[in-house]
Length: 257
Ligand code: DGL
Image (cartoon, rainbow, N blue to C red):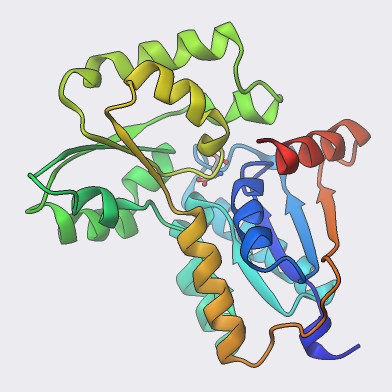
């Protein structure tokens, strides 16, 4: 098979990265994809950084072993913990990570108040601190660690009453004068509707999935690795949980409106 026609490997600590896969598929519908969710080891966001790095490197190796021509680290936590190491290991590989979409939120006019929802690990990491330092004169930025939130999505719950109560309690102390919310974990776009219901339509919500997908398209084009096929691409879902339910949940999230 020509290098151009090999699949793009995408992975996350679980099913969250499917929010990024959807953006990839929207702009590169003729590419094939292998999506790996490491649900058995989820959550990553409350683990020590060395462990996240080890798991992340293993995921990349496995996807390359399955013939991936490039890798999307569709997890903010894994990106924060391991992307620098991965770039050292694979300098020529088209490899793109994701980070909270703070830039467009902070550059909203009028010195906005921005709430960044992410895992504890992402908020504590140097990568996030550097990102914040770049925009702190443009906006008031509050980092909100959300342990426990990704678990709802992992269990397929994206609009239950218990999820609504959880999010209401988490967000209500900040809602009075927030202008924007950044979804800094790839699981959170799946609960965006509930977040909007709680925060109100006035609050703009940002996520980095589309920007990450565009960056991957750019990197593949640079490397001459975009497929020339015109048929719709195949998406293969794999999960360390290895159950049919998990794959079914993955497909459902991929197709969710
Ligand atoms: N989806 C992951 C992220 O973007 C993290 C969820 C977790 O494993 O804690 O950060």
